[in-house]
Length: 216
Image 1 (cartoon, one colour):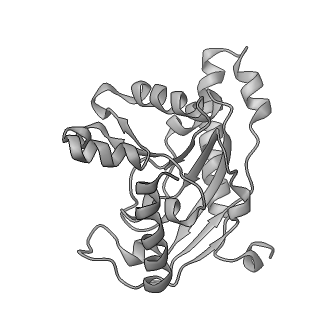
Image 2 (tube, rainbow, N blue to C red; image 1 turned 180 degrees about the horizontal axis):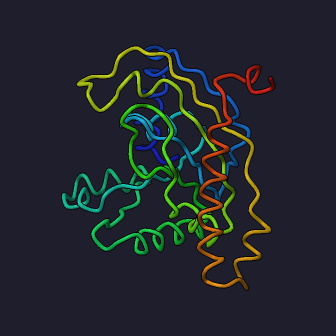
């Protein structure tokens, strides 16, 4: 971590422990170095900060390119490893940016659902996550956050002291599908993207708040 990242990371870690009484499971499933994709459910503005603060190494985040207009804010965002994504140019431009960062061995936090859930329930994954997985060699770590919707949903003005649990699952292996994608038809390739997206969300859905429950 660079100094500014640590300055943000350390107090947030203490605050979340005290305010949310958070618990974190499966951190050893996350590699200390990329390329890797942390694929998580998304129910709150808190989610990116919760993911980043729960890990002992610096990771990268996606941020709207419109946030990078001010020089000071741009410097802060880049220092904490935010990656500008131009939504106006479409998904392919964003994918290119993600792949460039993965090729530099980064760990990136992605939300397969694409946007925050309005009711706290898991949503359908966007096929873009399948494309990102297949076009890279990144390790995929399914991740689920419990309690962030109750702590800070769209309608809340300020986070509530709700118990939060973060669980990192066993990394997913897409070696066979990646190999198939190199020679298959375009129609089959679209099916592979969809299949990968579904598998990622299914893996997230299988995660439970505690290891004891996940073994039942």
